[in-house]
Structures are given as structure tokens and as C-alpha cells.
Length: 316
Length: 236
Image 1 (spheres, rainbow over the protein chains, first blue to last red):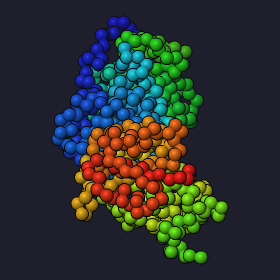
Image 2: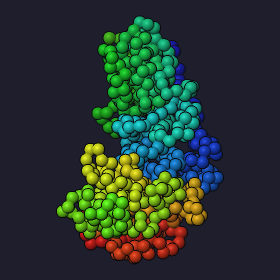
Image 3: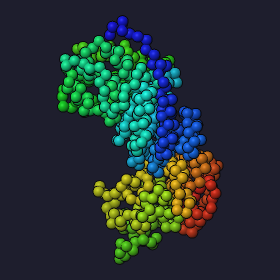
Image 4: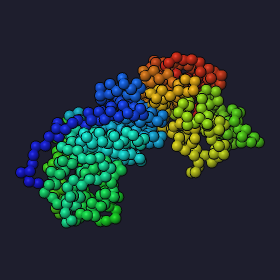
């Protein structure tokens, strides 16, 4: 990476907040779709206060009761409603995980779960408010679609796709975002193609795109983007790797390292390949506060960290 | 030997249970839930095999999913299940397991087994029917009745739902607690008190007395959720 191309990269501050985009989209769709019900545990309740008045019974704030939040959502879905369930990722996915498994999956009903906080938006709050393992946990359960939008507009698009259905969808909002949105897609989108003799393929997930592009700017690699990680676009990745000069894949995810490594393995089962996963490390708990940028740096998920990893992986 | 079609009475339940559990455990008294479930399906709930998919049906959610033979027997007696389905229960090809699965068994509203899930699901069901203003033909709201055990109440998820249902005034929700004294540390002051303090109407009743159960479930209780604590002696 050449230092002359480096620019200051405002992230969260420069983009519309993903949580506001979520609330706006749900409020809008509630006007059109009487099935939608919002289930809350205090967090973000102010964003649905007007909807609660406009649509009696369709905004349910249970207080700080996250197990009941998922159970209630399951019951709502059993009556044909479309529950949207929302709080911080650790309290949405980790605390009531058995409810997600049984009250939604085992009942064979759906819901749209929308978390805030990403992996370490709440850096100063500490470990209790961080859930880098959320997507990996959801991934143990069948039938889930997982969206990790990289921009507030992509949050809106993911919700517009998810709300009319009756399936199980997890949408993970992040405090950092890319400068520009990409059109909604369930598959991989090539953002910067490599040559036929390229070193391989980089897959950037959601808010990791801008920094990944920057970190790999001086490498001949194909950079592909996805905001939909489950189902994973295995066929798309296989095709990109087939067109690349080397079957080497670097995966850059904003949550637990290697969360999608098994998907890459499945996608490339027909060829010898190498792969590297970047993400929040599994083997240590980072006992430090500070800012999200501090945590990205500590996890090697800032631009220099990704650049170092990419050079070590591709330039062998 | 009664014909299959005749197995529709309370007196037939032991025989139906026997088809599942074998000869030596015929005693219906071994099943703490039997009388409550029977009274609900026989006299209280407005639901039948014909209305099992009607949005305005009454719903029974068996939260305490273990020991479901009594439940399956009642479903068979009431025509939701073929009696022949009871044979071979818990075998690989059977729809009937030691815990019920709503996807596999007609008439079963929820899959259960892990304790503490039914009450929050029932709360959501009642809230969903209320939000959609679902009404029976006579204009009244359909009921959602969930059965839990006194031991099951140990699970904290129940208490989230008990408090929320009371505060949200979900009058169409009824919880029946089978109290066979199986809670590890007991409930000093009584189980009903836990519901009452959270804003529920409460009733305590002998869990084998059909008329008393019927009255407890149907006597007007206002617009609060209703908790019926049904005491039974035998443990299951």
C-alpha cells in the first residue's frame, strides 16, 4: 500500500446511522404491512414510540426481559405476525440463544432479529456489551439468513427484503460503515477485479469493505463484497476463484475470525486452495476499553492490519 | 375389546395410554396432567380437529413437554390423532416422541421439552391474537392456555413472562400450573401468590376434580390473565 493514496477515513460519523435506518425502514413498512410487530427490551424504544401509538399492540416493549422477548416473538409468529426483535447483539443472540433455537427454529416459525453493537462498537463498555460470536452462534442453527450491511442504505434494503417473508433473518448493524452503499444482493459482488494472473480473491463482509479495498490496493487480487453471509454464495466464490490466477482466498469478516471459513472450504471443495480468515480473534478476550478504532487495531482489522495480513498471505 | 372409534371417553384414556406405555403402566393416575388436559379439551377449549387451523381457535400449549402420553391420549380421544399412531411411539418413524413436536403432530401447538418456553410463547400468541383483533364468531377473544409444572417454574424465563403478561393485561392468557410438589426448593407462600402479585387473577383447585377444574377455567375472571394452580398428589 502506498502512503500517498492514504486518506483520512471517517466511518460512523460520515454515514447515516444504521440504527436510524433500521427504525425508519421498520416504521415505514409497518404502515403497509399489518403483520409486522416490533418486540423490544427497552433498547431503542424511543424510535418506535409513535408507531406504538399508531399501531396498538404492534410495538411490544417487554422491559429488560430478553428470554421473553424471543419467546414472545415466537408466539407472535405462531399467530401469523412478522416479529422484528431488536436489542444489543449479546442480549439478542447470546443471552436467549436457546429461545432462538427452540422458540423460533424448532417451532418452525420466523422472525427478523436486528442487533446493534457489532463486535466492539461498545468498546468502552467492555466485554459484556460485545458479541463477536453472534454470527457463528446463529450459524449453528438451520434455516437462517444473515445480513451484515455495510451501509445504512443496505440496512433499509435488507429489511425491505426480509419483512415480507416468514423466514428467520438476522440483520447485524455496525457502528462503522463504508462510504457508499452497494445494491442489495444475496451473492458476492466484485468490487475490484484482479487479472487472470491474480494472486487470488479477497472477500470483504459488510463494513470491512472500504478498509479492505484500501489495504489491498497494491495487490493484484479480486476484491468481492457481500452483505449476505448466510446462505453463503458458494457458487459465486467458486467462479471467482476459477477466474483468478491462484486459488487463494482471504476472508475479512467483522466478527469472530473464521466464522465463514467452513463456507469457503465447501465452496472450494473441488480444488486445492489456500485460505486465510481475518476477524475478531477466538483465542483471547481483549480486556481493554477505548474506541472501536482501538479494538480494530488490536484485532488486526484496521487498514494496516489487513494490509499486513494480505501481503503475508498473497505474496509468498 | 372396544373398537377404535369408541375410544373417545375419559374412561378410555388408560387404554390409550396403555397403547404407548405398555400394560404395566396403565394407571392414568400416574399422569399428573391427565385430568386437566382432559377437562380443557372436553369442556373448556373451543378447538376440534376441524378447527385446528382456524385463526380464532382456542390454543393449548403444553409447556411441560415431558410425560406427554396423557396429552397424546387426549388428542387421540378427541380425534386429532389416529389411535393407531399411538402404537410405536418414540420409535424412529413415529410422530410421537417423549417430547411433542408441533411440526409432526396434528393439534399440537408448540414443540416443548426444554422447560420454561411455553409461557413466553403463550404470551406472544395471546399478544398476536390481540394485536390482530382475532375474534371467535360470537365476538369474544380466543383463549390461549398454557400448562406448566410447579418444578418448571424454577426456570426464570417463566417469571419474565408472568410479569410481562400481568403488566400488559393479557386477559386471554391462562396459565395452569400442575402442582405436584416437585419444585426442588418449593414456593414459600404458594405458587398462586407469584402470579397474583404480578397482576393475575388466581384460583387454586384440586387437579383431579373435573367440575372444580371446569369452574376454575370458566368462571369470569375479568380482564387480567388467569392462573389456575391445580394440585395433584402423584408425581410424573
